[in-house]
Amino acid sequence: MALDKATEEMLAEALRNPAKYGVSGCALCQGDRISVTALFVPTEALAKRIGQPKNKQRLIVYGLCNSCATLSNVPDRVEEAILKDMGTH
Figure 1 (cartoon, helix red, strand yellow):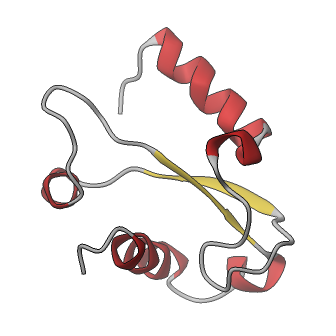
Figure 2 (figure 1 turned 90 degrees about the vertical axis):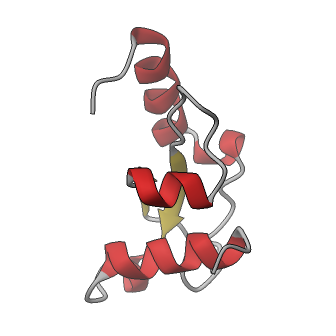
């Protein structure tokens, strides 16, 4: 995934300061102790489902607590939670 300079800078800031981008708890258990900040980049098919504007890329910053970060299939679980939260599942 190639990002322009402005997007790279915004992403770096979001990963340093997730609260500024609305991350207030674990994406899976909703606990408030985040130990991992990560990025969800939807596939093209998923991007259409969540309303990605044409010629734009949707990037979703999320957090995980220690317990949830070690679960099996974390990427699949996070994707499911994001889609459920967005009302597309």
